[in-house]
Length: 463
Image 1 (cartoon, rainbow, N blue to C red):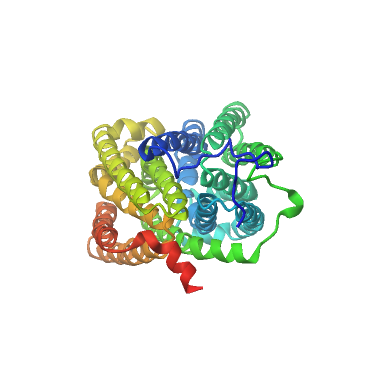
Image 2 (cartoon, rainbow, N blue to C red):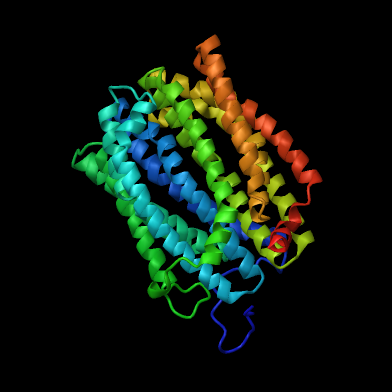
């Protein structure tokens, strides 16, 4: 093991954050805020597309853009879950002060991102019509949905590589630079949307092109930074390769998260296919709600990301009590924020939905869903928070099993049953609070009664 002693030859660590010392609460808050702002600007990518497309190109185009969200997430979520596993590996080695393994992990992650991006491009472009037909996409919407989806996935490698770079920097405690790069690329995205659609009057495909260009810009900025010499995370192009032992660790910690993301996305695609059967107004209303929910839930996801990094670094340093303190703080903060957000969204749902599309039918569908689910956001936050703790502790298999059984199998079974019995859309929406409740109860028992803090040691002992 190569330790990071404070010598003249030490690699620069001034741009990273060691979360194993200092006040855990202030560290998590300072780390969370840039992540939160980064998430806000990342949401602006797709939200700007939806807003501008809805205003300039109409409801059909809006439905095409918003209805593709679940399908896009289904295809990318598996690889993003693996990237999360890579972040856990890097955080743990950084906490353990093992510089050599940090470098190997970074270069393995870069190789993973390149291969994954190319694979996603081929799959996304080639199978777009098949996927959209499988989702029962409205025939009126289908041509524009195919357009948007194919152009979006032509830039899949930029999307994957940005998330890989962000995972690397976040794992080392650097949450500020991803924020700066996202602000820059989000501004580019919005300006290009306005130029291509509002100015040139191009079709829905131009919104996807604007997103791809802006994502590519953020990757360029990330790589310029990561290629700088003299840092613990410095990327050397000739060193980008799969290190076998690191790849196995990334798969071990990331595969469950990838599967978890995929099964959640699969369940959401099933839900989307049921929503699509109610027509384009339901599609647009459901899609707008998803965009808004993505924004309003950002504080929770930000705390979850901070918790995973904090717990990984501290368990790598074998500071178990400190890891527990961070876990308790992140769970409480996420739950309280989620419920406050849910109450606000419940009250002002018509106004939020109307920002994107003021068609009465679209607003009605969106508000119906918002007022069924919003007051249960504290349960969604609790489930995601415990899942983040598990991932940080190297226990990603646990949330995978819970999400697979509850958020996929049970949710889909419920939806199929109520659609046969009632055929009303509100019963589909109730699938979410029902499954959030069940998963939260299971997570509570696991968090209270399991020995989650020793996951890494047990894995090492198994070898």
